[in-house]
Image (cartoon, rainbow, N blue to C red; front, side, top):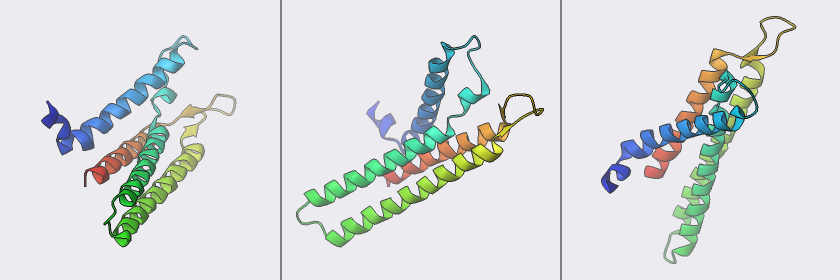
Length: 146
């Protein structure tokens, strides 16, 4: 059983899929008590939360790398600094992606059928951020693997 969890396919595909599914499940559960319908298109939009989770995981990896480098007495400081700076670069890029997706969602992810109707989530407003969020989680897990 342990070998299954150690497999790169589990860490880089199955685990991010499970995270995505859990994010959807808990979003639906948390909103179901407030209204009659149990599922709305907005409930399936978890992409921004997934990207934020990926950013936080990457930030945690940066902190762990810095701590590990500081704890090893014979560590080459330049190697430790390079790995931390590379991780900071990835984290900055991920934050830019997060901001870009959030701005795009605000501008293009919603539409009205008529001027008096309520705003509705578009199909691309649902699919694109979720896909980007899933891929960001996969990237973080692949980077942690290597």
